[in-house]
Length: 85
Image 1 (cartoon, rainbow, N blue to C red):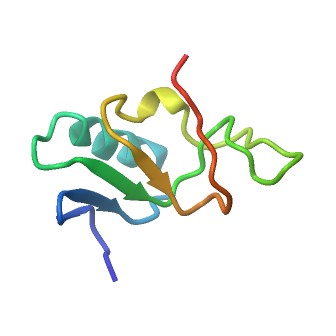
Image 2 (cartoon, rainbow, N blue to C red; image 1 turned 120 degrees about the horizontal axis):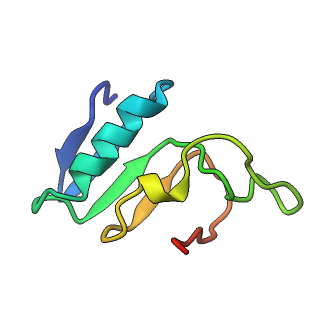
C-alpha cells in the first residue's frame, strides 16, 4: 500500500488525496521531475466520463495535470482521453 506519493520504476504513484491543493502541488512537481515518465493516481477529473452518459463536474481541472506526462487515474473505469485545450 502506498500512503505517500512515491516514484517506482519511473512512474509516480499518487494515492487518493481529498485536498485538491495537495494533489495540485504533487502534480506540478511531477511535471518537473526527470525521473518520472508517467503518473498513476486516483483523482476525479472535471470533464472525464464517469460512464457513457455522465461527465464529472467536480474534481481537478485538466490544467492541473502535467502536459508532458501520461496520466492514468483509477477513478475512471473505462479508457478515454481528456485533453488540454
